[in-house]
Amino acid sequence: MTAEPPTDPPTGGTASFRGIEVAVISGLSGAGRSTAAKCLEDLGWFVVDNLPAELIGTMVDLGTRAGGAVNRIAVVLDVRARVFTADLAGVIKSLDARGYRPRVLYLDASDEALIRRYEANRRAHPLQGEGRLVDGLAAERKLLGPLRHEADLVIDTSELSVHELRDRIIEAFPHVRPTASMTILSFGFKYGLPLDADLVVDMRFLPNPYWVPELRKLDGTDHAVSDYVLTRPGAREFIDRYLDLLALIGDGYEREGKRYLTLAIGCTGGKHRSVAVAEEIGRRLGGRGRTVKVVHRDLGRE
Image (tube, rainbow, N blue to C red):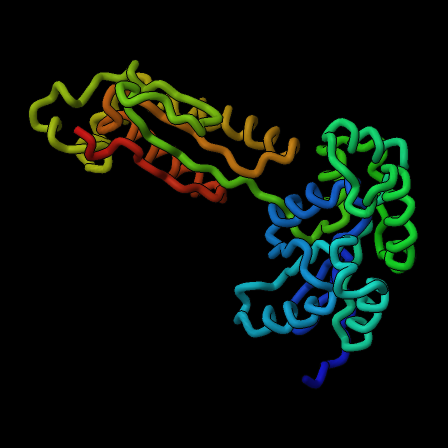
């Protein structure tokens, strides 16, 4: 393959090659690589864990042929790749020479912090072998030393919480902003509460269309039922105020790194009131730019 000349890094620092941005996540075992990978995944990156270093270029080549479906690739690279190469920094340099200059994020931590984490999880270090934990840490520092020297960004996680580490990573990739995805789930209380609900709303304070003969066989997706439910006293007022509350809660969840929210809206059977209100809330949230999916769990069970 003939490589094109490298492009200048876009705003935010990640490198782009023919429309593909590439990042490498590396660092010491226990320093937070998994957290960093999940954060970038939430930011819209295609993340590959423990890909042999020599295959990074192949992965990027495949991304360029994906027709825009993949435009940000992050590879988690650690000491497990030593089977394929002993010079991880050399692999990065070879990619740079081909025009693939990736941005390298290296996660570091003090021996004291890493030892506490390993002892808390009761895990052995991957390079420990028959020796002590400190021997494994020393061997890993030596092996990854050249890569740390080549890193574009080094984050010491010794005193960082998971949330603080996520914030640091988001700051390092400011051109990609996280947005929370919300599922609006209607359900019937008589079939049980949804186990995955973050928030639960009870619409049984509204009159039940079930007792209106011409509406009984219809459901909340029908205009007649929806109009009936949404014009009952208190319905519109409730939705207006609850949307304001959801905006407050959603912003807080995003600050805490929670990217997926399930709002469960219930009525007795999950057929009329909950369905109509879920559809209305989903429509209005979608109009505000939120990523929303509306699901009716119990529709059709009666």
